[in-house]
Image (cartoon, rainbow, N blue to C red; front, side, top):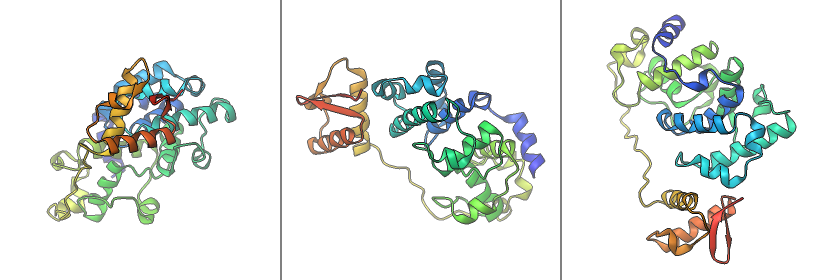
Length: 273
């Protein structure tokens, strides 16, 4: 199984720049790739690494610069947590991304998955990296289930096979390109003969995995506010955001102020400095 997957990987892997970069480059990619597809991350990652090639460079940036540079990647808390982590790495770790999982988890925005991913892909360690693509491959291959559970349980974290960084990258790529959530290409899969789900006739999970709604949500409102401020060269009045639901806009503005994304002065709003 190990040889089949790694051989397939060597022949079919995408040439992604964070696969041959510094530990900082890996860390930036892991923050950006959370709930965001590779196609959207690629240009933004290149921009960030060119602009801020080391943690100390990002640490010196103004908060407003960081929020603007994040653009439309979504989930902008990631940008602020990465900026905060850069400051900690600069001041406490001599501008070097920590190597061990426990220390990595002390950084802002770095949980169990991100810490293990950085340690694995930046430093060549062997950890159980439970991203959704890897979890889906194992759910089908070993459990005969179409989809994994919503979050990894103790059994997944402790019992899934781990053979090192190349193995993890290969299984992740297999899930992204072949063993996809919809319309998997089983005929091209190097693990087809071992797959319990395929052997059982690809049974459906019986659950509709709906994507999160977006239009008209508070999350869309927050994104619209930030984008409007990114594009503006001056502070804006509330009515200039042109959001149809006043109460939703007021709540979004209050949250963004509380979370440190924006500031308000004289009834005008701007990105936090």
